[in-house]
Amino acid sequence: MEALKLVITGPSGAGKTSVIQAVSAVPVVSTEASAFRETSHHLEKLTTTIALDYGELTLQDGRVLMIIGTPGQSRYDFMCSILARGAMGLIILIDHTSVDPVADLRYFTSLYRELLETTPFMVGVTHTDQTLNESLDMYLEALALDGWDAEVPVVRLDARSPKEIIEVFHCLLAILEPTP
Image (cartoon, rainbow, N blue to C red; front, side, top):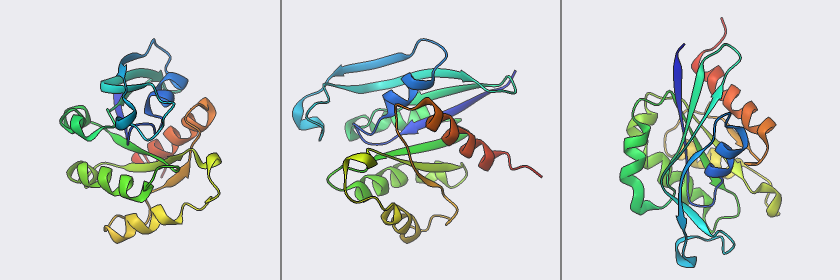
């Protein structure tokens, strides 16, 4: 049966590891290391991914979804490029409580620009429950300013909720395989 590769990327603390841990049907391969306070805007975040996180999910049609989480720190950008090769889709997670979440989004769309020209992607905004600014319009505006298709989905996502994560995966798969 066919295997599909999905890459989840974004800055440190956005929830990439949490997403994979929440839905993987196999034990998650994780390369977490101690994080220093100056490397993360979340003071309570004690670890960070340094190479990748890996999990799998079997879809209803029997295909295996290989879920690859990238490191979030810019010093590991070379890993992001390697991990994204052959991806059928990409989800950019953005922490809504970040100092500048729009800059984070623009950084990751720029980092993956070549891949995103030909590969479906969407934006999952995490930590929306921790801020008074509930609007996601700023992300849509940033994508439009950078020339991305107005159809790029931007959704709220609780990185701990398997139900929400599966819905986001189905949304991305629908972009990939539209029904006739």
